[in-house]
Image (cartoon, rainbow over all chains, first blue to last red; front, side, top):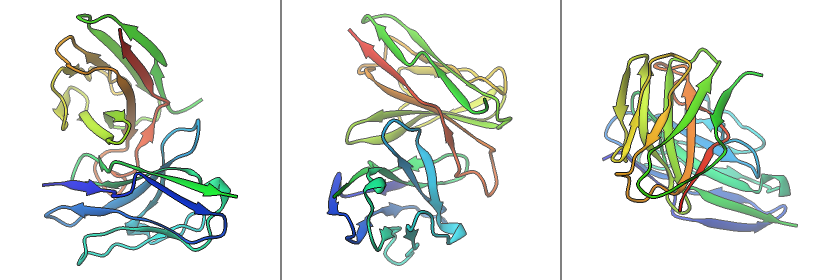
Length: 107
Length: 115
């Protein structure tokens, strides 16, 4: 079965604290994984993809095939990081999303 | 202004009525998608289309129908057979097959409320 699981509905941290948003997946093939973000009153948009191995807005994510995970990390959270984050998996031709995690960064 | 345009933003429907949500894109993208967003359930795929005149069912297609007669347009009809249609609906597009498949561009969404 193809599935993406984000175990936390809400993650609340203080500004400057490290952040880790968890994502686990189930996929029999070779996956492509992504993180999408939706800021308040904005459209859902791509944050980063594992194939690029890039850091966007200080966020990084490493694909761990052994643990079937793709956790999103940032060493020092900022208030502007508060948003809904979705992990997504692409089997050919479509994109499957997880349930989403709301990140709340408190001042 | 390029991008994905969904209309209407808000829609009210009586039980037993069909309603059609519009989605138009001017990005020259081959692929288009419809998702349903519910609190705590994330985005669930309703239908998707990789090319004009072709579309596939997603995970929750029952009670919905689509057409893809033009590259730019992918309307979604919520039929009276859909048991729980009140939701937020998101349309998206992408360049299609290949390394960019995972980058979807989303519309602002349509909120449907069944009275």
